[in-house]
Amino acid sequence: VINGTTYYYYIKADYTPDGTESGPSNIAEATPIEWVELSISSGAALSGATDTLEIFINNESEISSFFFVIEDEPDYLIAQYGEIFETDRTTGWYLDVNEVGGNIVVTGSAILGNVDHMSAGDGAVCKVIVMATSQDQYLCNLNFTTSTQVKDANTNDMIWTAEGATFEVTVETQFLVMPNVHGNPGDLITIPLLINNTQDVYGVQIFLTDYPDYVSGIAIAATNYHDFSNWTVDGNNVGNQYRILLFDNSLSNPLPGGTGHIADISLYIDPNAPVGSTAELFMEEVVVVDQNNIAMHAELFESKIYIGSPGAIYSIGSVDESAQTISIELENSSPVYVVDLFLADAPDGIVVTDVTAVGRFNGSIDGGQTGEQEDGTARVFAHDLANGIVAGSGEIMRVSYDISMNTDFSGDVITWISEVYSADAGLNSIPSSGIGFAILDANLSVDEEIEIPVKFALHPAYPNPFNPMTNIRYDLPQASYVDLRIFDLTGREVRTLAKGFDHAGTKTIIWDAKDNHGQSVSAGVYIYRLESSGLVQSQKLILLK
Image (cartoon, rainbow, N blue to C red; front, side, top):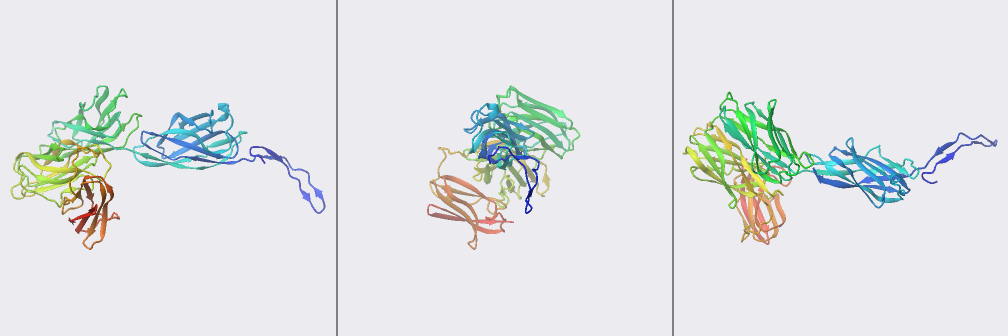
């Protein structure tokens, strides 16, 4: 038989052995149809970007048209209207693609194109452009739905089977930061709005909510970080929220990728707000959009507002990027005997390697408590139980940092004091506030001016003793193979931190007190050992619990 040809038939019955035969039955008809195989290529794109998907048909007889309905689950892909391209199998065909009901709908017709049918073969029949749209990274499934149709040369429906595919939607994180502030009841305070964005930003919308409800929005003013002259920069109260909007009206002057202080938000503290209380300021319904008005993934670092005049005000002072140090300053009205301070960074691109007491502070930095934390912040725990930090103002500590080698991050980092606690001689809490911020150059790209170490060295870890993280630093005078591992005192390997080729330079790696299986190890003494180019050095670590 020939596929696509209609055949007519009837039945007669032979009643052997008497030799009689029945008359013919009614006439029936049937059309043999070929099974065709459909498939689609997998894809991947950053949210807001596009990728090309190829659709394939494996057929043994001619095809006159097709109608594909492809479901993406979840619905994170948008077919770009009319963005479809023929292949050598569909030259001259009428082709169209559209987004209908969350599905990718593709139409192809030789009849409408007034060209020959598609001949037998196996290969791509068209290419369609889709855009990824998601605020979260996700792997979407692509499948042909039952609405899909393929017709043969006689426009008969062909039976089909299909193989699905996947589409990986990736995201780049944009960071919004509002550092902590303080103010008295009835005061007008200003909170800076900071951004770290990897992609061009065309708009930002934030609804600010405070709890308890002690503050209200007054105004927003753009800074000179960017030319916002053709942007809408507006703030208005919506119920008990303060809505902030920054939007590029021209759609041609976006906020380019980078890190900076983009606006100042003015808030009024209720005159009846209780002194000594803290209002948390939340960023809700946040939307950061790209050139296609698609929301991008954003991580938020929100503010705390201390009501009153703190007895201890900590701030970010000067930054020496060549020495990679940050100054911590303190203005205190009475002696401070204990300091417990947390430095945050966004993105998480730096690690604290050392803290030094300076100025009025003659006490100790507790190495067992100081260092990187699991949430990415760096804790500084210090005390002077004999004399305390006398009342006054100025620098009290200098924090040394290094670029994190555990991420692929490259660029600038916002750092600020996210939490701080103080105590007096009786270890009673002193009302405290941490204000200010700094923007650090944490670029990981190769710089010819970076000083290359002259000899191989494995440095003492910091902090040590430690809990729960410590920084291990080593010097490579030349590019070479490195092997850095942690052992317990029995010689059993606990964790491999680095194994492979590495470029020359000073390197820092964090050990989070976990073994190769991701399990936390017990307190005790450990040895970290570095081998490179036939040289071996080791140091001792003490983990406290």
